[in-house]
Length: 222
Image (cartoon, rainbow, N blue to C red; front, top):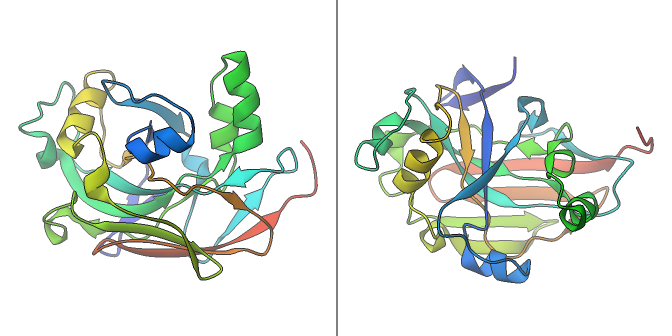
């Protein structure tokens, strides 16, 4: 079972729904335009790892990047959820790193193909132990950061997100039913960059928590 924890309690993980271009500065560094409505892609639950585990760079890639994100964990299922009631569906929050094989993604972008392979390798969704929503009264006012080998690579504030969490939940639930255990990764700020074998990665978000993972390389191409 793939799982997340909220206040120490294991919850079976569902869909991993990841936003793109939800921080303007990150969209600019990637040369992308910001959309009027949230856009997203899915990661498989098998990408989840936890603190102390390893991000494994696949043999097919030589350019894997980190993207720290605030993860919203759904506790109450719903479809066509209104903005006004969206927060009632949030069980808690966690720190997630959306790991991306940037070279594979670049090929997919050029060909107009989905990013599933670039985003979906095993170990490409490290997630911290989460905390209940009641312990995070203002999720739009949190420092969000990531360090590699003790040096800051990403450092921003969740208040820089273009879309609010209620807007994100409402929009996604109009397309697909949200279920308990679903994880919404709300996008990354600027500063994404390459990881190499031997790197020690620490990511944190305000009162939500931190996660520490290491990086290794799989020498075999599949």
